Length: 218
Image (cartoon, rainbow, N blue to C red):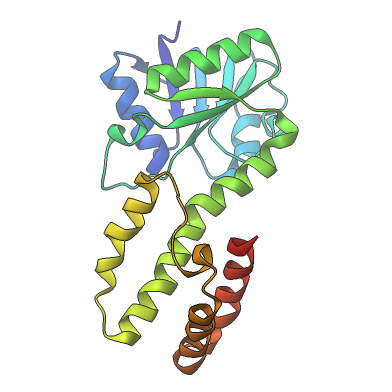
């Protein structure tokens, strides 16, 4: 039973987690039974070493291995598979999934309990699989930002409103990522027209278009 947590780090993730725990009646204090590290990945190892061994220690990093929590033996990681902003609160956690990595049954049970308490849907992830998992998460979230920016720049160059892209992108997700458009139709003449148009105004974006077109065709 999670009764008290010491949330260390109150950035975008830590502030949302702390707010949700308070909503659920969990005490937030330094001498808690669980220390939850919501600090930058590069700081996890040093912060963990500064904690007194004995209690539970966990981090919320997606790629950092459990070894970063040495010398603590009662440990696990819980990575909320979500993107966070300070402009929103604990509702950002609602319905998102969470990767739980644990070395013992007790650690797994506590990790799953904490995830559900936060409003997350937990699944188990092997420690050695974390880099591959995190790469997938980065592609889905971070590179979506890159794609939106590239598409917006082409829209702006064409005199079209970039904000018009957002309903299109949202509907693509709502439609279960069903592929439509010229590549799905095998319309390679239109794809070549895209390349020529991009080359004329933003030649730096043509390699990106080519890589994405090739992977989409596959």
